[in-house]
Length: 80
Image (cartoon, rainbow, N blue to C red; front, side, top):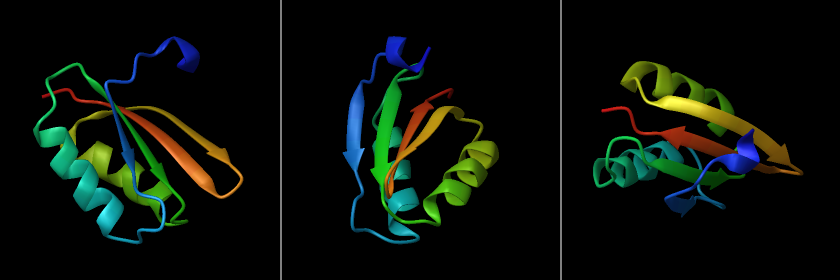
């Protein structure tokens, strides 16, 4: 199913550590329209728990989380 999801914006947070991936995700989501999907890439091991917590807190939809080597790929749909 993930392959069918249209990504509207990609945010490269490789090399950044907590809290910067979340800070940059929040900034990116502010300028996106409801329904659009953000792809965020991070190699910070804490980003997995951070993104799950952030999406739960903000109400945005965490569509998918995948990991390829040390790189996490998050797909988040803006819900409001």
